[in-house]
Image (tube, rainbow, N blue to C red; front, side):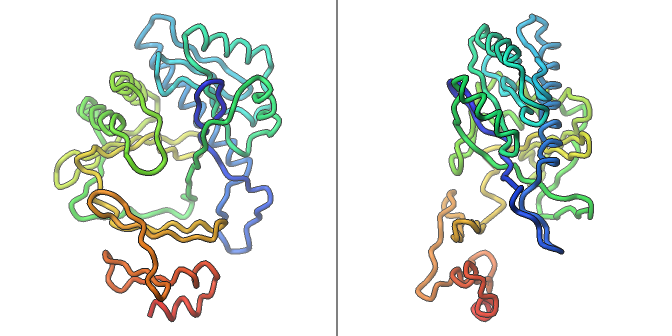
Length: 312
């Protein structure tokens, strides 16, 4: 995301132009066509949430301005819906329209935040840079092909179900509490005032096609999420776990950074995930799954026979 003062880059989609998938393999990176579909779905979502905010406030302060296939939106001060999204797949924006957008944000005392996919038209980045925008942050968007179907994962003590109309207030409280207490690990997340976040969550629940879900842990509400389908994109539109129920799921996880030729194994310890180093033989052994072991160097080098032998 590029912004004159503060911004975030989302969603970022790694470039697939030079990464053709081998026969029988699942591609790790999406192409421009899929990226454009995702961006259109995101722009539509942001626009509809902002329209819901405008109906609620009815004071004329919000706006939704179409911009070259995307939208520029402002819901209220400090709202997560104050941004420019969906650009880069419908041609370059008219400079006069960008002038209008920048004046609209400035008139409300807000910085301009533009979210750009990395598969967007490169000329758009040059255009925004020349207007004084700067790169502030980057994040990846993860997805999966659902054409083959999938099965729910059953976890003892955990129930995930649809959230009905009679528990809207409970759902809003859950997701607001989760969002108002960002995790202290990993990439820092953008933070918003709790009252603004609560109104934004309530506005998002009013979007056409949104399905709300609640997660129960041992019968107690532990988190919430929302989901919708737009133009063939099944979009997870938000999810969060309240602080009291965090760190009760994943005990260990592995990150394989292929391009960096590095494997990191993390283990939950006293509420934090700590990186585990290989032993003197180059092996990491799981404490959560007895018998699971991994020779890191063999994995990175692709020595599958040696890797299997080390795991035996």
